[in-house]
Amino acid sequence: MNGPYSETVMEHFMNPRNVGEIENADGVGTVGNPACGDIMQMFIKVKNDVIIDAKFKTFGCGAAIASSSMATELIKGKSIKDALRVTNSEVTKALGGLPKVKRHCSVLAEQALQSALDDYYKKKGIPSRIKLKSEEEMHQE
Amino acid sequence: MQKLINFDHASATRPLPEVVESMKPYMDELFGNPSSMHSEGQKVKQAIDEAREQVARLINASPEEIVFTASGSESNNFVLKGVAFANRKKGDHIIVSAIEHFSVLQAAKTLEKLGYAVTQIPVDKDGLVNPDDVKKAITDKTILVSIMHANHEIGTIEPITDIVKIVKEKGILVHSDGVQTVGTIAVDVKKLDVDFMSFAAQPFYGPKGVAALYIKKGSRINPLIDGGIQEGGRRAGTENVMGIVGMGKAAEIAAKDMDKRVAHTRSLRDKLIHSLEEKIDHVHLHGHRELRLPNNVNFGFEYIEGESILLFLGMDHILASSGSACTSKALKASHVLLAIGVSHAIANGTILFTPGIDNTEADVELLSEKLPPIVERLRAMSPLYHK
Image (cartoon, rainbow over all chains, first blue to last red):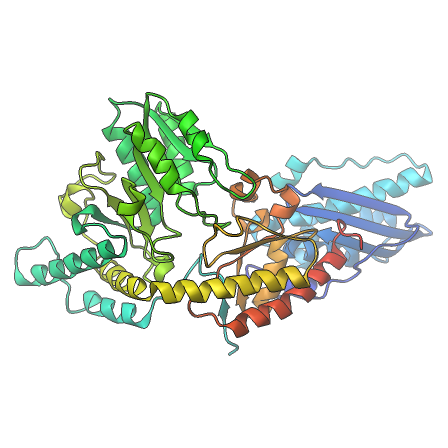
């Protein structure tokens, strides 16, 4: 049963990549809240400006779990600069599309990543230019 | 193909074979319009008359007190708007509970926009309306009290007779939404003493798209659909003959099998509640434990989200539904769960199982075996869960 989802979404939902936490992560980002039904937490490990590991924990629907899984896959091995450019549409595209009402799940994944990168900058003492979206903005996308 | 296990009878039941058979001639050779004077029309009129008797018998009403409609939602709209419009000179105040079906709450909202006043009665943590709260809400402008017989999500059966007693003392009309009870448990409108009751064919293994409103003789109500004189002038439009015939057949069987059905689903319900509470921790049964529909099991699973659970159950061909925001088109958590004080997080992790006559003990065992590892797997992924 796929429900409203593509094969790729279901595959990532059933076998999510990179589930878990990273101890002493270089960046941790948490977005969402229980009222909207999704909470995403992303952990990154950085070496020489490259994301060498990424993990996630998600409370949410099939699309939220698959988006988290795909987002961590997309950023692993990327430089910080390139990871900053990963967008929700890239996550959606890699998943073979998401139902319209579930697009905000990919935005949540993008924002969890941005939040983790923001945290990374803060820990490093680098001024961060990242502006996180509000709950409302995330649902509008 | 693997057997489909339907624990989502609240969404859809499979119509009984006898029901399907009874409907077939009316999509083919018995095509007459029941309003026609000629023989073809009269044959069909007879079939509708018979269905009206069968449906009336199910709730101990007279046939002329039954108006066929297209859905429980239509019946609810019909009664709220029809009573409000017909009794405008008497008053403009309507009382409903906070956990009514959307078709009652939205109809009430429309009436508010037209200048009527609506009071929503809160419920306690089990979903029960306190009859005293109804009493306090009544004003000299109150024209209708509409409290559901049992809730569609949490299965709580409301103290309708106590509420009716209070409301009747004041000479006010009472409606009860019986979509979840009629055909599911024994319902006698004379004993309940309600003036109106909505119910649909679908929950008792009848077809979709057909329902009815019980209107006690002499109750003032305007039609929702104006036009011809079908249904005694109370609902215009050529009848859904096939659906009405099917509803009649389903009602006849429901009346005959009632005790057997209640005993069967109740035993499956209790077995499922017991085994899930035993096997999974951090679960909450929503709704009243005793004053509960025999076919309702509603659990909140902490730390995880409902749609994910449904997707995994779907892999095992098990159907259920959820109170989660993610499964609703409006992306909002169930208003019923929030009204009984359930947190957003748990409301979003709520699953509704509604067993039916086609379920077996083996189905319950399979579900009790499949569900715990799903819950465990999702909790392992959840940022809210810490072992």
